[in-house]
Length: 333
Image (tube, rainbow, N blue to C red):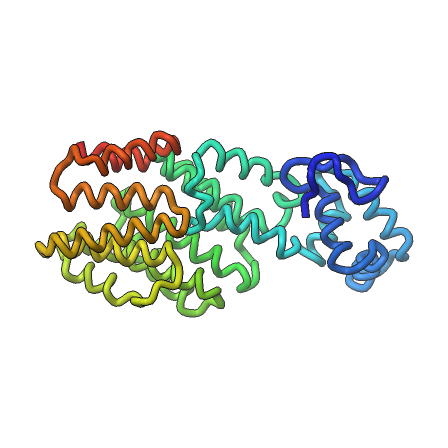
């Protein structure tokens, strides 16, 4: 794992860098396998043709590469070991829309992504999460074409990857659908949503990821129904989601969707209570953007465009420098 600035794990390693360096990656592998010699033996077993001492010397040189191209030995290390799970989990966190990473200010999100968008991460399979993270940031700045470009890079990175990366494929399909819906391409929306549904059904996901992906899929399907005026069918989709609160993001999507459906059905008091619950779920999960969206929903339910809730949501959008959230707030003026 990355070390605090100035702390090295050996005399032959350079100072620690922001993000992840080859020295950090090697330190994680040594932690996992016991010694650098053990790591070298694994490489010999997979590739052969080199003696352990030569491989160990090559790995010591790799430690000095910082965040530059790791060359042949960097490629071999990534091919055999990949990125340790403890490190990839942080990159994954930046690529999933339903993680609180997207509730940081946009500029800070971009700073973090750029710090990690260097070798060894940029040369590994984990780079797909960076592309997805950049796509989310582009959507928050209303850059649909830019987001689509990042998705193409994610699509390229996913080619040939094992099923371990099905969560990234689901993320890609859902963001594809979102962009297509904003560009009025209904055929592409349908195809992407069907792709996401199939992947969610067959993927090995954690309980939390499954709940969030299912709620996001329902939310996008319901969005289409609501735009078509079929509010009852959209409400039925939200009400079919599990009633148990397994994850704050999923619970927010369920109750916010139900609140909107109740509002359209004329059940204003019920809509108000559900919107309040949605705001509570957002707060419990640390989802600042979702809380702002919940406040906007409350403003709509109360029927007062100048409601204090709208002003609070607009202030959140300004603090996060989130153009998409700001545009939503401004629609309530």
